[in-house]
Image (cartoon, rainbow, N blue to C red; front, side, top):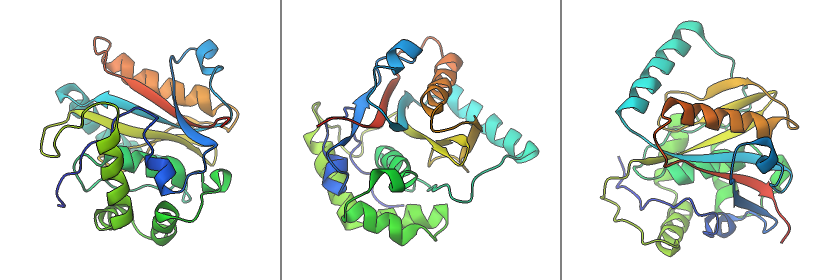
Length: 228
């Protein structure tokens, strides 16, 4: 496995996506609450949610049970869903951003740059191969390191244990998916449409919070089209 990266912080002000070619009108913005009234305050349209949450023994046990249940009962996954494995420690923020953008390229009109080049080059690869390709992608690696260093809080060292983890939640072909590069496969969380996606993604986030109601370290940001 490649050496660990510096972790990204959840602050949507970091310039990582801008450095990689996301146009300025598209931004990651704070989600201040998951109730309908607060969701309606988000700029529209919303393309993806990023959820940052703590990984502990309770969560790992749930993940194992969830995986076993899906293997037993099966699930539908769109062949057009872009999913990659996380093969580098502390790269979950970057993997979640790639998931969010790669599944919305037609709406986001990504500019030529390192991220567009990476997504185009890995469309035909397997999830594992995509993850391994990220390890050796100098452009994305350098942009990640620069953004981790310039975050508003002091970045921990790459070797310092980090128990917070990013996942992406996206809509694709009539369903809402949880994309977590640490899991064996994407998780289909049920039917969705572009019009209902925001509420459907909020429901998925609430499921995480309900499983650990005493935990306060949950952060949600949304990829949205926001006025410059």
